[in-house]
Amino acid sequence: MSELFDEVDEEVRREQLKRLWDKYSILIIGVALLIIAAVGGWRGYQYFEAKKAAAAGEAFNKAIELSEQGKHTEAEAAFADLAAKAPRGYRSLARFRAAAEEASRDPKAAAKMFDEIAADGSVGAELQALARIRAGGLLVDSAGYPEMKQRLEADTAPGATFRHSARELLALSAWRANDSAATRQWLDMIALDGDTPPGLRSRAQALQALLPPVAKS
Image 1: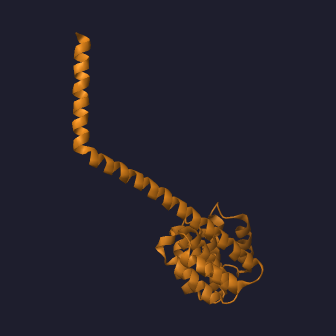
Image 2: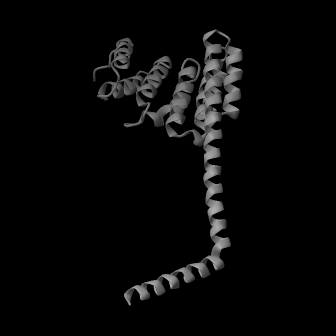
Image 3: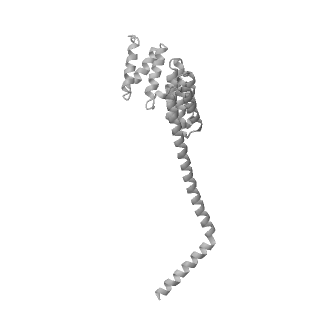
């Protein structure tokens, strides 16, 4: 008797499944096709992105080769092309390298290129800070101390990624402006920071030795 009931239940389930399939088969097939299309589209996107990244990497290496061969104009053009067309990571690197190539010919123009990177929030805070430091390094011999301070003071704060370089540049700028008090301010920050790199600490000590003695009260 139990076998008869089992057969009846099985028949009922088959009938229910058949009715469900007849009612929703088009929807089920449509959803399945959408999933297949989405997976295929994602795989295709990944493939083309990987292909673009590989092409950008090859172009970036060729631009570096041009730079190493002393062909700076051609290298800058190649980096500029990458900065306009490459995927985001290579785009940012190319912008830095293009500015570096320009620096060998026109430091002020290169500083402007670094300033443009520093103003671009899409590159990320650390690259923006690095661009400010690179621009400051190019301008330290020509810009006045007030301008340098305006550019770099925020990057001297404790914990700032490039605080050591920012402090050194401001110390040099203040020294060039014959502002001994400001020079000592930045040199003291360098000396008191336990994470200051040894080489930078040595340079700061050498600059400290060039300052006039502090007047005794």
